[in-house]
Length: 199
Image (tube, rainbow, N blue to C red; front, side, top):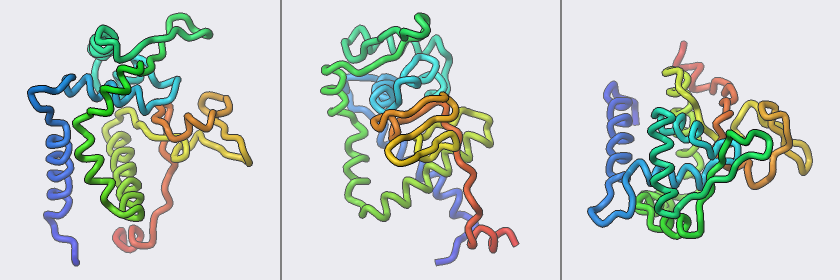
């Protein structure tokens, strides 16, 4: 099947449409769209990223707006903050047991279930493509890029240990698949097909 001039437009429109449909909450939803995003973020981010500034960057909003969303989740008993031992001004947030229970009712579950029905090979290829799109768009717009350690240029692994050059510390295994605000995408070698397209 050949690529038509409209294909990139259609893909972009479908991505936006799928995102909008997946984010739609019914009238009985426990949280607003921004609160759901925040709850998901704190469930998926590593310890150094689960901060108001980390969420503000991820949500592309102001620190003040991010703090208000976090406070609303705190009042509902869904997240709790812990001050850093190294920097008492820094607070890291975690989901409470109640927060994890609410997250299990996430409206995004419908889309997750649909994606789960894809084969493993298709899912992995899709994730690689979407990660590349997200990183490239962030670079193009000079916006923060978010990704996981194993796809980051700061990441180094040796035997049973993993190391982050940005944080200058070893990584716990549990943090490697989590979102990180210090993420910097690794440059991807141009594929044979890309090189032919460029010629």
